[in-house]
Amino acid sequence: MKKLSITTRITIWYTAFMLIITVGVLGILVYAGNLRASETAKTLLTDSVTDASTEVKSFGGDFVVDDKLNFYEDGVYISIYDGRGQLIEGKIPGEIAEPPVFDDKEITKMKDDNGDAWYIYDRLFEVDNQFVWVRGMVKDLAEQSAFSAIQRLAIFAFPALIVVAALGGYAITRRGFKPVREMISTVEDIRDDGDLSRRIALDKELVDTEDEVYKLAETFNGMFDRLEKSFEQEKQFTSDVSHELRTPLTVIISQSEYAKGDETYREQALEVIEREAKRMSGLVSRLLTLSRSDSGRLTLEKEKVDFAELCTMIAEQQVSVAKESNIIIETDIDEDVFVAGDEAMIIRIVLNLMDNAIKYGRDGGKVKLSLSKDSGFAVCSVEDNGIGIAEEDLDKIWGRFYRVDGARSKEGEGLGLSMVEALVREHDGKVRVRSCLGEGSCFTVYLPLA
Ligand code: ADP
Image (cartoon, rainbow, N blue to C red; front, side, top):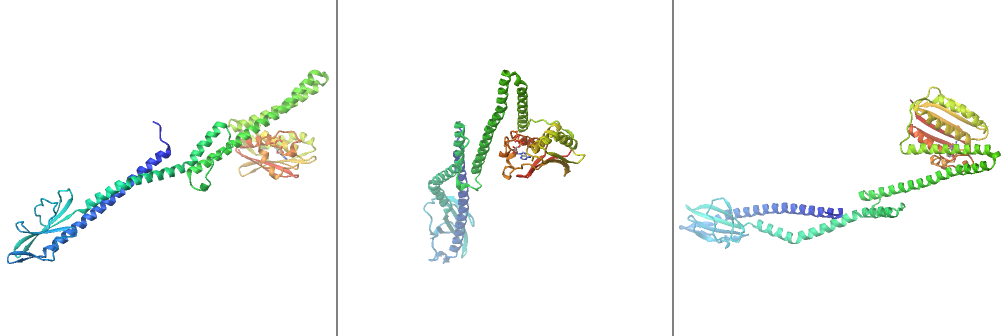
């Protein structure tokens, strides 16, 4: 069987619940009311009978009842009998055809011919050595009034209550689920036309409320924001990769054409081809590292690495490269700094930073490689006095393929720092940059000590 919608189900539950509560509360009220009405009737009955007994006198063997006595007052019927049960005076309700036998000081309950309940109370007195019965009868109004109250409620109030509860419940639930319907239609639209820029229209009145469904819709919109952004990045990334690969490929193809036609140029062409192929290989290797890190598949060959020895080696290697730009390499490397990591990856981290420091360094300037220990971390920094980075670019340089405009004259594709950041993260470390445009930059890597 097809399940009902949540709105309908909640409405049904809500209405049933309201009914149960109302019937329960009414039941308690009627019961308490009945109890009280019965008690009042009984007290009135016994008091009336006791009062009436004082009004019976005897005169020369005959009973005389005082004129002041009312035989019917406040619903109580009073009747007086002699010791043999013969009625002397009084009123008896017509509905009771057969009154019960006398029972001194006991309240008995009986039904009349119409089925209504009565309380009957008898007292036996002695007046001038003769027995007199005084009997009081009162209708138990409680049952009657309760019955009619329930009937009235059942006939008018209950159907009205059900309708009000059902309509109210339906309206509240429908309103509450409005964002859910919006969500369904937005998600369906996105599914059908793939337009991730769509958002669920949110009710402005609900901003900053505790409305859970509103919060769910808001979370959905947040998720769409992230999805859209990540799809955009994905598209941009694919286009950047294609562009970066196409440039060296075009050079390789054209150089191959030349080499085929001109034998004298062949040697030179092969060198260009080799250089471009190496560039492509470097690019592909950086892309692979990044994609493995993204998918959590980057395996590190972790061992105890002598970070100090490694930095000294890289500094020495870079001296000749730096010389081409008239840059001096300085070092300030503490001994005995060991980290747990993948040696090849740590070399790539430091080499990339050194490479950038020289590439974006000042002609005739210097690059300083330092290594020390601080609070459980090996602190390796690469400082240059080159072109520096503007404040607004400092966050962006870690983005894939991002290059500051002023750096475009230099070779590169903007993947180095993204890769450094990923590799440092894989080693549970962090990397920070300080820089001032026109004055130089300082990149600092923190790796946990072994
Ligand atoms: P690439 O060097 O290939 O452009 P990177 O990811 O290594 O890519 O660097 C991204 C950008 O950050 C560079 O293009 C450059 O604008 C800036 N940058 C990186 N290192 C330095 C530095 N030492 N000095 C100035 N700018 C730098």
